[in-house]
Every structure is written in C-alpha cells, then in structure tokens.
Amino acid sequence: MKTNLLANEFAIEFDDLDLAALDDDALGEVRDLWMRYKVAVFRNQQLTDEALVDFTRRLGPLHIHVRDQYHDEQHPEIMFVSNLQEDGRNLGSLGNGDLRWHTDQSYTAKPVHGTMLYGVEVPADGGATWFCDLAAAYADMPADLRALVDGETASFSGLKPDSTQSAPLRPDQVAKIPPQRHPMVRTHPYLKYKTLYISPNHIMQIGERDLTGTEEILDRLVEWAEQPQYTYRHEWRVNDLVLWDNAAVMHRRDGFPSAQRRFLKRTGFHFPEALGTPA
Ligand SMILES: O=C(O)CCC(=O)C(=O)O
Ligand SMILES: [Fe+2]
Image (cartoon, protein in one colour):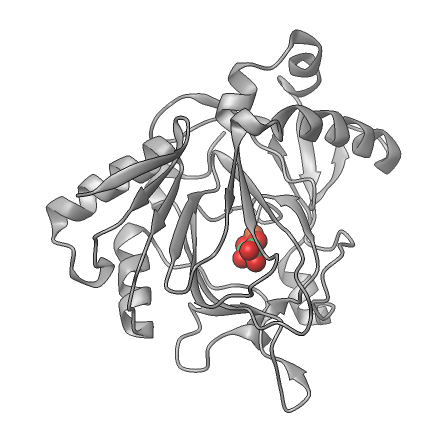
C-alpha cells in the first residue's frame, strides 16, 4: 500500500488502492490508518454508486441525511453536494459559498462517525475543503482555553444560520432534528484519546451562555485550532475520495465561483449501535 502523510501526523494519502476491490485484511489496514491519521485521501477512484455505498457500509451502519431533496434517487444513502442546477432546482446541498467549521450531524443525538466525499466534478478555482485535527489542538491547548471546555457541554442545532445557499429545511425535516447537547471534550471511542468536540456552524449555546458569549468562545477556540500545524487543506482532483473521522476532526470549505461546476457524492456511516455515542 503506497501512502504519504499530508500534514505532519495528520491526513494520509493512498495512491494505488481500488476501494471497490479491497479484501478484508486490506480494509482493516485502511481503517486503522484512517483512524490514526483522521483524514484519508484516496486518489483515482472509479466508483459506481453501488461500490461507493458498499464501501461505506463496510465501515459502519449507513447514514441517511435529513435533506432528502438532495438524495440520489436510486440510493438515498448518497447525497449530492453541489452548486449545479437542474430544471431550476438545486441538484445538491451547500451551494458555492464558504462553509464554516463544523463536525457532521453534530446536531443529532448520534452524529456520524465517518463522512466521505467523492469528487466527480471539481472547480478550477477555490472549493478547497479544510480539515482540523481537534485532538492535536486539544492536546496542546493552553490552560485558560481548556478551562472553558473541560467538563462543559454545548447545544448543537442544525438550524443555525449559515452562509451556504441550501434551501431551508421543511417543517417535517425540522421536526427530525431537535437541538442536542454534547460534551465539548470527549474520548475517542476506538483510540481512547481525549479530543475537543466543537462545531461552530452548529453550536448555539456553550453552557448557559447567550449566543454572543458562545460566539466569543467559539472564536477563541477556532483561532487556536485552525493554526497551520493542526490543519490540512484538500485541493480537489477529479476522482478523489476523502474520508474523515468526525469524532476527531472538524472541517470547512472555501467558496468558489458560481459559474464553475462542483459535484461531489457524499455518504456517511455511524458507530456500531453497541458503542453508543462518544462521551
Ligand atoms: O463541500 C465541501 O467541501 C464540504 C461539504 C461538507 O461539509 C459535507 O459534505 O459535510
Ligand atoms: Fe460537513
């Protein structure tokens, strides 16, 4: 297996794998390396929708995203992330704007463990996805910042206003995602290290603070965590598949020109039921 580390001890690239043809041993090796380095970049994938869903399912119970208007019709486990339009309607979620730091589905009781994005069409300019190693940022965190998050909880909402052009959720979708509280420092369920758990695009309340007080703390945490030594910026190539661990990583996206095409297929998977939710 040919691999390269992309950012110190964070993010690993696989050059010569076909994810549709991994035997169980190779899958185990890939999974271990992914969890250790938290973000895995697989180049040159030629995956049918079935192969994408099958690979995702081998890693954990499949996630179905609440924004069902962006599901692939044949495969509801695949959601489109795209600025493309078809017959006047958005084909995918998240438009072409900047997207703030977040961890996926942190606004649900059982957030996804892994998310995958598969690059079908990518723009020439912008549209990079940034990843931040929250475990490394937490390990080095100064005491005054740690004091703000140790033993603290936050309320996460899928309805926090953001800068993307996704359609508002329908009332039946809103009903599926009441706000959730999670600890801001958790133990990784498999590797047992402690890590910060934040999602600035979703956190509405830290402790009992109001939104202003909450945003002040989020700004301080982000300023610390987004230092270059904790981040990796992924510039997309066609046929990249990127997989990240939402238990240890937050991510964000740079905007890109609306006239350029970007089309990604997205899947996600949960922790096995027996593990419960990280705490
Ligand atoms: O468009 C991107 O690069 C990131 C989208 C994203 O945050 C997601 O699909 O979870
Ligand atoms: Fe995301």
